Length: 117
Length: 117
Image 1 (cartoon, each protein chain N blue to C red):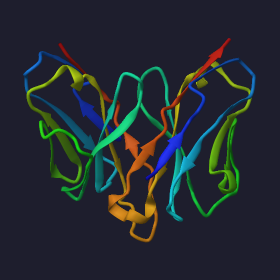
Image 2: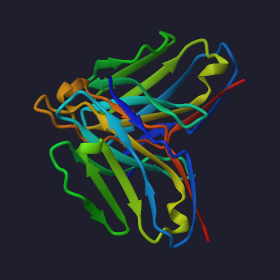
Image 3: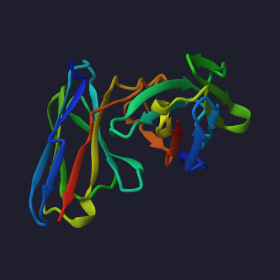
Image 4: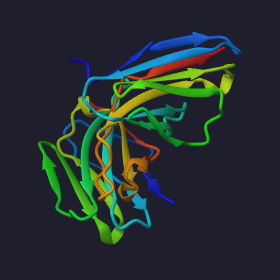
């Protein structure tokens, strides 16, 4: 069975602070994909990143960076110099890619990030 | 210009009624999904359709019946609504995950907030 754990439930930081959102996953599959989604207060779900299990390179996109470590089954997300607009619920998700059309996303419970001015 | 759209955005109804939520995507994807997000923000897949064929049915009560008239549309009909059905329902779409182990990101609609009184 697949499982995604986001142990932090709520994080509050002051603007310009760096913040890391943790994600730990469990799977028996050797081929899988990891995702992060953002859900701002307006409610929509916004795709941020997709990473496959064979690519452990870290990724940076502007103020966002992701650290994937298979050895610890973690896929952590760091926001550098946080801004008020980063306030949202962030979800980590895992896909069982080997199942083809039957694959599905398993979501963590989400981390509510509040960035105070 | 909207990629995944859902109607209505808000739905307030009484217990026992029947209601439908419509979803359309213009991304050219051939897999579509319904998710339920509960009051604690937990996201869980309900159904997936690939090329109009039901692929995933996650032990959802049979009061919920999805229908896909074509690849671009996936509607959700709910019979005999109950208080516990109150939630936000998200439609999503993606390219079909390949049997070779590729999983694609899902793009979500804006959500439909269903309130059953």
